[in-house]
Image 1 (cartoon, one colour):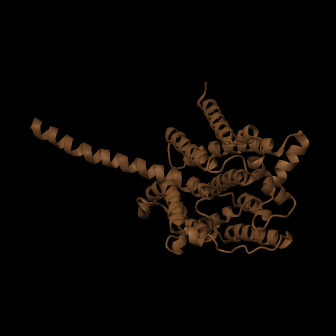
Image 2 (cartoon, helix red, strand yellow):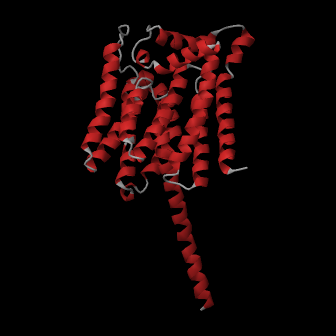
Image 3 (cartoon, rainbow, N blue to C red):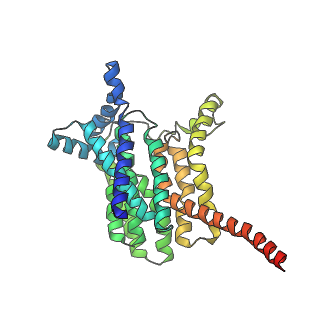
Length: 334
C-alpha cells in the first residue's frame, strides 16, 4: 500500500475517533432522560439562524447555514450533520497541515508533527461536553487558516484575499494573518497585493457588521479581563490562575521552541513567529483564555517551526556530545 493511502487511512481514523469522542457525551442525555447536552448545541445553532444571538455570534453564520442546508437535503438532524462535518474538516485539517509542515520538515517529521496536532485537537475538542456549534466553527476556522497559509506560500494573493473575506463569515481570527503577510508584502514592495488582501479582509469584516442587525448587547465588554489577568481582581485570583495554567500547559512548550534561534530565521518565518504576540494579546483582552479552542490557529501556525527548532537543537546537542568522544579516541590512538 502506498504511503499516501496509508496517510489517508490514518487521518480518517484519527478524525473519526476525535469526532466520536466529542459526540459521546450526548449518550448521557439518553441514559439520564434529559436533553441538557443536546440543548447546548441547539441554543447557539438556532440563535444564529434566527438572528437572536448577541454579537459576535450572529456574525459567524456560515457554518450553521451550511449545517441547516445539508440537514434539510439529507433529512438528517443538525447534530448528526455537524458530527459528519467535524470528521470531514478534521481530516482536511490534518491532511493539509501535513502539507504545510513539509515547508519546514521532511515527510516523516511532518507526519509525526501532524500526529502532535491531532493530540492538541483532541484535547481542545474534549474540553466542552458534546457537540456544540462553536466547536464546529473552530475546526472550519482551522481549515481556513491552513489553506490561507498554503496560498500565501504559493503567493496566490488573489485567492488569498477572496478566501480571507469568505472565512470571516465563520470567524474573524483569520484577520490576524494580515499582520505577517502585510509586512512580508511591504518588504517585497508588492503594494497592490498588500492593499488587496487588506481591502477584502477589513472590508468584509465591516460590511458584515453593517448589514447584519443583532440584538443590543454590551459586546465587547472586557468582562473576562478579571479571569484572564491574575491579580486584576483579587476575588477572581484562583480562577484567573487556573485559566492561565490551562493556557500555559497548552502553549508554553511550543512557544518557547518557536522563539528559539529567532534571529537566525528568515524574514518570512520570523514574521509568522512574531504573530504570536498580537494573537495572544488580543485573546487576553477580547477573549476567554480558558477556551483553549481559540488558540488552535496559533498552534497550527507555529507547531512546524517549533518542531524544526527542537530537531535542530537536538542535532546540535548530539554533535556537541560526539566531538569530545571523537577527540578522546584520537588522543588514545596517538
